[in-house]
Length: 209
Image 1: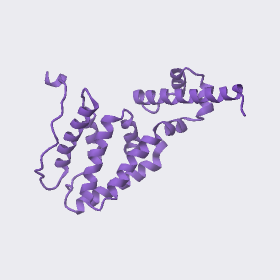
Image 2: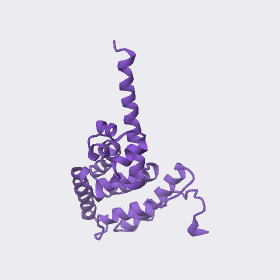
Image 3: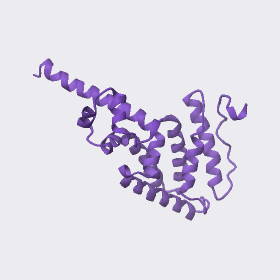
Image 4: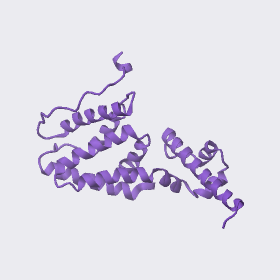
């Protein structure tokens, strides 16, 4: 049976690892994934040697921080791509992306890794790009997605959705769903006259004051 002294280093190591991951995530959200390892160590209140004992390079640290979020994002994409109705799958993916963005502070870095670039998740990015391109191609072939839709339009969706500001997560999600509905209709080859999602409760915005 391990004694108290043998358990303490393990407990300290787990505590340091958690501090590193929390500090790294906060730093990545503030400054992007290129932030220095020294800055992350300083933010975590540990020495750089301790950080490198847990994560020997930046790639392993970024991978640990964002792997779960990226897997969730990709799972939504693969689920949409597997839908036999490509337009329904396309719509569902856009809606899911928008909701994920307003409910997860780390989403923008995950989206950038999956669709915009970065060598750390290069294999996953290429797979995501190809999967989304094929989903869009099928939706166009079905006559549902307008022919001039391009991948960069997906980035525009995320840029527009990032401007949503609400007092509660519930209101942010409602606003995101309504915005996604507007954008999806703009992407559709034929007009859709279904009712939009309910109007969300949003606080005053400087643009409207």
